[in-house]
Amino acid sequence: MMRFLSILFEPIRMVRRHGFLCFWFVILLLPAVIQVLKLDQADPALENRELAALPQRPNNLAAVLAWTNQMDAYLNDHFGLRQSMIAWNNQLRFYGLGETASLQLAMGGEQTLFFTSHDAAHPQRMRQFLCGKGVTPAVVQELATSVTSFMQVVTQTSKTESKEADEKQATAIAFVPTKPILYSELLPAWMQAECAHQIPTLPAILQQIALTSPEVSNTVFYPLAAMQKQKAEMQLYPAVNFHWHGRGAQVFARELAEQQWHMDAARSLRFHPETVSSDLQRFMPGVPLVAQIESPDYGASNITACVGPDCFPELPSAAKLGDVSRYRWQSPTPTSGKKLLIISDSFGNGGAGYFSPYFSEVWHISINSSGQLSEQEMTTLRANFANFAPQQVLYLFHDYSISCFSRSLNYCPIELNKVLRQLHPFPLEN
Image (cartoon, rainbow, N blue to C red; front, side, top):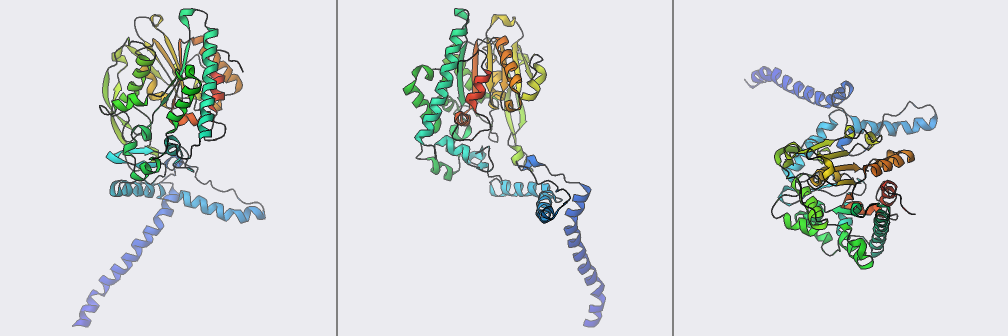
């Protein structure tokens, strides 16, 4: 009987055994098939790094010896299903463990996502710099001196170059408190402990400037206290963003315009709800990061808003700069108000429009891509700024960008002190 049953079920066992082998053979073969058919294209932006390139055909012995390692690196970065597996890993870690796979991101309290560094090789550099970890008194002094020197030159030149007393051009520089500083209590516990006994860098620099050059101190703004007060009433940063969007930027602009420049708004901004994708999405493929914000309705606010190079036919270099925008009152005519020029990093994109209730025309130019401009293009851009003839110039940067005023730190691709001197609308003394 047992032998009969064994013979009876033998085909079933054979099917199961061969089916099992075939299943795993297909699984093992699937990545290669997907790679050959190019069904899962590798995207360098998803990993914030350059993926290994396909090596060239070797033409000498040294190239032959190096080729195998190069091909191995290429296959590791481009094998089929790699992008999907990265997404699955992100989903598992984010939803299952409440953490991120990227070393440049940290999940904090209240599902708040923190961006900790622009440099993947130093994934905590920005956060540590801002909280003061490893920032020596010499670095604080260097940055205070550099910012002071720049502001002394531009503010003095603005006064001497102005032709009419009532049309003096004012120049200011402002730094935006970013999330690791503004919402430091939501950082992971180990990050809070690491910074608990440090002196925050920006306040230390501003204190040094106030001690040595009080007149410059009045032109350097870091409205941390005002934004800390407002954060109890509204969300100043979307929980999944690095950059500001919505009302956080409005608080900042209102503080500068009304409290520092003593201006009244000539327009009242209206808002509408909007769903936006996170600017950190590229670090978290597979995990949809979206935020619900209130965005300005400029049309309903009697303001014409334009974003992108096409907004500046008078600026030949606008296409290279890319991140540019302008805002203009629809009526009465713009001659009834003052003009503002904002030269910024990426934070100007989300903040420039909030100055439009106070100025009849606002030009915003990001200099993040200014390294692509030739010397002649820089000179022409500066001439365009002078022709615009703004009554107020604002250099607007997020707090970590102050490190770009240092020659010793070497944290930034551009030296702000040098670039901003090249672009200031009026001729500067050396």
